[in-house]
Length: 399
Ligand SMILES: *Cc1c(COP(=O)(O)O)cnc(C)c1O
Image (tube, rainbow, N blue to C red):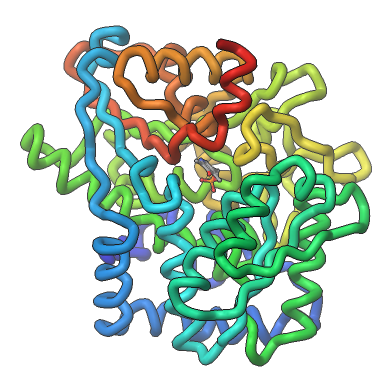
């Protein structure tokens, strides 16, 4: 795992846990010892050669890395430029999330934790967590909103088959934010033996930085693979969808300081940015604190979190990680909002042109191609964060 230089990089986290004005650790006092233990140890542990060796071994033989960087010829023709797809959809469990859960489970073991707690919305992070707990033989409890448990039956079944206990969150709107509250409460009550695995670049410091580092393998591979194919490590564009922001953080990581590389972050507009049914955080949100860090979030005048909406469960989040909030505010990132309809069209287009059915989240990134103006020689990498099997029932409604 190659780690980017911190000094001199205004887009990386600083020693205090901030990306520009965003980040930090806004947590209840009861949670402080847990988060502090993690903060004191995560960099030390990640730098250990034995940790790196085990992480790399599992990424290779269990996850199937490196994932290919595929030149999409017919898609390139359609946009009159050179489009490459980073195939995170080929990872074990079908998306990039497992890169992070492998990293965190190895870290948990070295911290002497033998129980894992996690929260999940659509169930994708819950499945990735249950998977690595089975792999390591650790106890796994996943909190999930009661409503989500009803909506996401196949992922609930997967988690149970993998040996996890799925606990319903029955308070509030009985969705992701309530599951997050319950998981935090669980961690507060079990600080000694339990590690809390967060699934994106959100939460209190050091989570956003830790998750970004585990996912940074994506851009590390991109550079090597692009050099092999084209003779240069630097593309003109990297495009990725943003829910919390972990696949985008991984895809951008080793390009953050390369100003010639345009970083395009794609949010879910839902039914449209101004329809009241959207998840386009940077277009609609304001600075505030959510889930332990200061970032940009969708909120009412008096600071109540607004329920997000997107056809894609993985992008249905009212906030965005602090790294991305800083990319938005500083102008380093180019932000796009893509509607449900546009993402569906892009998903069908990729299936027809390349024989690849993308996750609806990744289809948002693909749909951003038509919002940009390329030269024929431009090299554009789209991070294909996951595969579309989980979204077939949604796609089927539009066949
Ligand atoms: C969860 C998920 C996302 C969104 O999460 P990020 O942390 O923003 O990457 C994107 N794509 C897929 C396939 C997912 O499962």
